[in-house]
Every structure is written in C-alpha cells, then in structure tokens.
Image 1 (cartoon, one colour):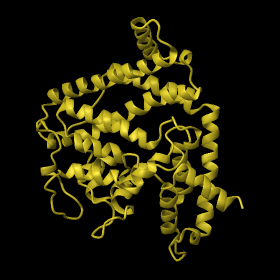
Image 2 (cartoon, one colour; image 1 turned 30 degrees about the vertical axis):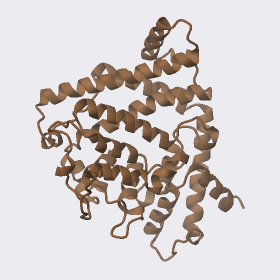
Image 3 (cartoon, helix red, strand yellow; image 1 turned 90 degrees about the horizontal axis):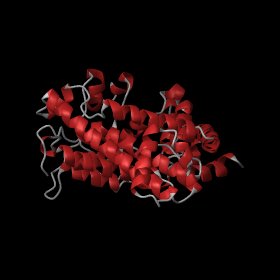
Image 4 (cartoon, helix red, strand yellow; image 1 turned 60 degrees about the horizontal axis):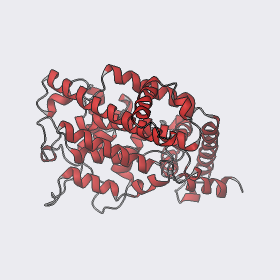
Length: 368
C-alpha cells in the first residue's frame, strides 16, 4: 500500500481502549474491519431501511447494501489520494450500525421518545455499539476498535456529549479534525445515498425520468448519454446517467482534495488534525450536490407514499417505547433500574431491531 505521509498509519495508531497483542497477518485497521463485518449489528443492517421499508421489495437498497457501496467509493478515493484503504473501509462499514429500524423516520421517533433522557442520535449509537453493546469477547465489552476507526464513526457530536466520551470526543471540544480517511467517508456516504436514492426512487415508480430533467446537472449528463447511445431506453439511460454523475463527483472530490492538500502543505497526520476541512468538493460540484439533495427531499422523501411509511414508523416506535418502559420484563430488563438507565436499555433494544422484527414485536405487544 503506497501511503502518503499524511495518511493514517496503523503502526502509529492511538491504539485500542484495551491492549491486545498485534496480529502477524493483518494490520489493526484490517482487524477493525473484520470485527465489524462479523458483528451482529452489521448483519442486522440487511433488514434495516434505507428509504423504502424492507418489505416494500427485494430490489431496494438496505443499510447493508448502502454501507457496502459507501465502502467501495471510499476505498477508491483512498487509493487515489494515497490514504489508508482499510481504515476508510472500516469506518464506511460501521457508520450506520446505530441506525434504528425505518431509517431517518425511526431515528426521529426514538429521539422524541428519549427527549427527557438525553435524546437519541445514530452516530452516538454506532459508537455505543462498537464500544459497549457488541458482546462477543471475554476480555472486554464491544469490539475494542482502534481510536482512528472510532473517531471516524463519530461523524458529529455536541460538546455536551463529547465531554462524556473521553479522548474520542476531544476533537469536538478542541475544534480539530479527524483523519482524512474519516473525512472522505462522509462524502462517500453522501455520494452513495444521493445517487442510489435516485435509482431506488425510479425503480419504485415514485420518480420519473421526466421529473429528473428538472435537475440541470442530471439533464446535462442524460443528454450526453442519449447522444452517445441514441437507442438507449429510459431505464438504461437512468443507470448510465447515475454512473457518470457519481464518477464526476468522485473525480472532483479527489481533484479538489489534492489541491487543498498541496495548498495547505499537509505533510503529517498531525497537520491534518490541526487544519480545517481538507477533503471537499469544488464550489461548482457542491452546488450540484445541494440541488440533488433538494430535489430528493421534495420529490422523494416528502412523497405521500414515503410519508405514509414515516407516519407508520412513528406509530410503531412510540408504541414500543411506551410499552417497554411500562413493562421492561417483556424483554428481560430488570425493573429496578432508574428511569434514565431503563430508557437507555429500551432505546438500545429498539434501535437494534430490524424493520420486520419491529413490526412483528409491535403486532405482538401493542395490538393485543
């Protein structure tokens, strides 16, 4: 691996919370990736919503397929910039572990339920999963990941919460930056979900090819695709346009980021941490990304069919939280806990549910 001096280096890692003997076959970031892939939380992503609830159809993306797509984009960018691919992959695969069932609607509902107990935020929950909730090891709780993977998982955090997290929360207080690998995963995430939500929206019939022509960037690329292949049908043109758009975003991100690295004279990872954001899109592509996000919000996320799923998610999460707070013994939780600790345990349980398990549990416990 041809790493640049400003890349994260597993041999210079800030280490794990619990000391372990090194592997003779894998670097520490590879070990992080492997632990994430073999975790129960990662497997459950297969049945958690991206946009469309899992039972809506087998061809729509889930949190699992989305995470794999983010990892693929992140590895490609890392290789181009000379960063550590294994770290970028590990962060990509773990970044959505803390998501509730029913996507963002589930998170909003659970956050409302947890309002008087400190709220709920999926980034914090992802970190809680890898630090505490996974329980496959005898010598420690969680997965005992490296500091670099853990800081990459924690995309954003309030100062109040950061003060509770020790070293991994310090950068939010000190206003410093995470590794470049962590920074690029944030963009890989947005590139993946913007373009793949367009694809899923088209597959579902909620977005039409004609609707997408309202986005100037999409229209521009689609016209080029049709010019190159006049006999292409709308479905093929849609997929080809999405591929070209994604490639343009990735190429721009690599180019702009390299310019910033050179301009800021970044030579070490310490330089990275003490600079402003380095991984970035150009001004032009930032505007185009924003136009895509705005279009998706108005045409897809606020579509009546998606809103109906959102309303159902709120009903299910609210009812489950209320029932389990009243009768925690239903899930083998001791009633002697304080209300705050009880709420945290109930929140952990609900957040870990898949879409279908949440619906089954709701039917069993709340509709008798």
